Length: 377
Ligand code: SAH
Image (cartoon, rainbow, N blue to C red):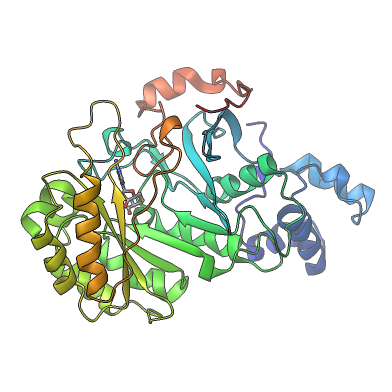
C-alpha cells in the first residue's frame, strides 16, 4: 500500500532479477531466500548476514508481507482456522488439522469460488478474485507464524502436508497456484515435499495434465456422483467436463502409480448418492486407475439443502469399495464446531463494483482486528 513491493511470492528467478537491478550478485538472492522462507524473517533489519546498508536499501523498496490474521479460531478437536485478510481487504480462510502422525494445512486458492457445487458453502459465495502466488504462499507462512514453526524444521513438524482444498478451484487459478507451490516445495525454504502436497479439483480437465507434468503433486478429484445426470446437478462443472473426460484425464495423469494413487473424494449425501448400487458403479468407473476413495460425511452449513448419510449407509458404501480393492477411508470430520470442515469455508468478502472499490480506496482497514483464539468452539 505504501508502494513497496512484496517479495513473498516472487520466484527465485524474479527475486534474483530484483536484486540484480540493485547491483547485487546472485548469491545475495539465495541468502535473502533463506531468510524469508527458511527462517521466516519478515524484518530486513533482523537479516544479520546481510550488510547493514543493503538491509536498509531493501527496506526502502520492499516488504516481506504475509496476510494479516483477521480472526483465529480453535476447535475442541485441535483444528485451527484463520481468516486471513489481504492487502486489499479481501479475505480467505486457511485451516490446520493436527493428527497423530502429521499435520495438514488446508490452503485456499481463491476468495470465494465460481463453481456453485450444491453441497458446498464456499459455492454460495460469489467469487471475488483469484489469489496471487504471494497470497497463497503467505497462508503457509502465516500458519507457520501462528504455530511458531520457524526456522523450517527438518522433522517433527506440525505442518507436514499441504492440501489445496480450501476456498476456490485451484485449477481455475493455475498459474498462481503453480508458482506458489514451487515456492512451498523449494528444498531451501518451506521445503514441503511434492509427495506431501495434494491438489484437489472439481475436474478442470484441460489443466489436470499440466498440473501433473509441471508440479507432479498428488491429485484429488471431487467426484461425488457416478452418473453425469446427478453430477451435472451436484457439481455443475460436470456439464463442461463430463465423467468420461474426467476419468480419462485421471487414467493418464502423469506420475500416477500404485505408490502414488489418485484420491477420489465422495461426499456422502443422504438419499442422494449413497446407495450400494452407486458404490458398485463407482468401482466400475475407476477400474484401472491407481486410486483410493475418500468418503466424506457431508458437513452441514446454515441453510444447506442436504443431510449427511447415516453411519450405516456410509459403512456399507465403504465396504463395497474396499472389497473391490480400493482403500476407502471415511474422513473424520474435523473442526465442524468452528465451520472449518470440508466445504464449510466462507468469508464475508463480496464482489465490489469498481466504483465501490475506488470509493473505498485507502480507507480499507489495514490494521487487523485481532481476536483471541476461542477454545472449544
Ligand atoms: N474446488 C476444489 C477444492 C475444494 S476441496 C474441489 O472441488 O476439489 C474441498 C472438498 O470438500 C471437495 O472435495 C468438495 O467437494 C468437498 N466439499 C464441499 N462441500 C462439502 C461439504 N459440505 N461436506 C463435505 N465435503 C464438502
